[in-house]
Length: 103
Image (tube, rainbow, N blue to C red; front, side, top):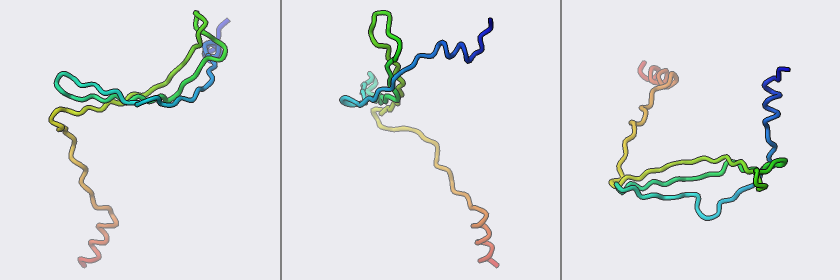
């Protein structure tokens, strides 16, 4: 008997109950590198859940976490490079307005 992809996926799905999470302390961890660069790691918990109908082999709850990390660096001399900002261009209506005053 051949199972469809949906049937296989439904057999592998685990049902989780969504848990709310709040930050305890700071969500930023700072590291000072040997070249004196400061690295700040921001951690956010996007989603947390506990399995409804399954447990780990040792009987403890089975959790699922979805997180995001954001890194900031601050060099010793506090310099950085960025592209120049875009130059504004004239829109069609601005060009028509210029033409009406030059006539």
